[in-house]
Image (cartoon, rainbow, N blue to C red):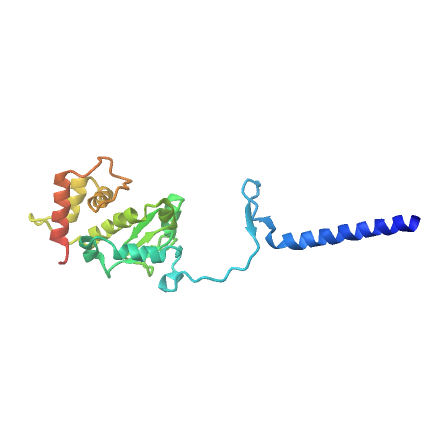
Length: 228
């Protein structure tokens, strides 16, 4: 009788062990573990272990540029292709369009700006002459916010202003400086062009929609200063 109870007990122990082993083997593949915990334990990233193949998003000259991000470079190039012809006709093939966080601008404002126009190619330390002279930078933050097109047009307006700096009004005065006076500043001129080309995101302009007079002014500016 005692042997019978002992055999039953051993059988139960073995059955339980086997069940636990099977359970662990079935669940181990889908178990996630917390990683990248912040020092204050207020931020935890939980990642499932899996192999992810390397994906090359961009392969080109901008890879060596300080601050280059690249995850939206292809999308940026598509936006550049879709720029309004009046604007693209002036700046096409003269400007570099880079998806990245301009490092000098970052150091100035303590965050990555949505967009930067850099006419002189400014290194992170503020010195000039970098490879990205005449460049427009659109950061991942602009794409995340959904403002990438308007930011691109704003920065392209700065490029337009710079490239047409030798264009004169009918009174033989600088059209560029005349536009600054007319709209209030270079930044407000750039914001006005965003509205002119159907956008809405403005950071500097506070006077609302364009008036008919303002629309005619921009049309005259572009028509006079474009290269054809």
